[in-house]
Amino acid sequence: MKSEDKGSFHFNESQESTLTPVSTMNAAQYGWGEGCKAWFLLKNPTLTVIQEEMPPGTSERLHLHHKVQQLFYILRGEATMEIGDESIELKPFQSSFYFNADRSLRALLTTDNELKLIAAPAIIGFSRSPKTG
Image (cartoon, rainbow, N blue to C red):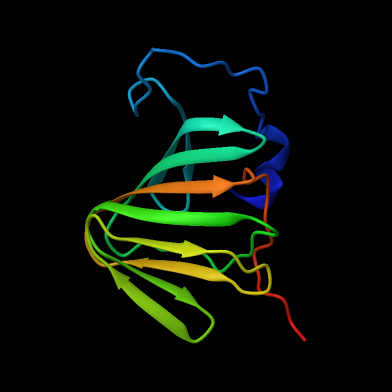
């Protein structure tokens, strides 16, 4: 989500437990980047679960989430997650966890990719460039 989209990001604070299945067929959707799609499977102030699809060759721009824990779980395809000078290759059914407000994250896709992003507390905006100094 672009930082300028923060105003359109609304929580359902009264979200109650439900037996209604949630999927990409009925969840709130938004687009980002070049052809990337995301669906909010859960969206409240303490936890966000997002399913994302990223076409081959797409990537997130370097950005920073302040005080947010993130778990990326690859469902399909492969990705390279980068923080600083370090990177890790992820394949289907592998995950990687991040919590560090002083670093940036970048995902470079090599094949069709589908992933789950779980974040706590919820993601409500971020910087598009890493901290300097």
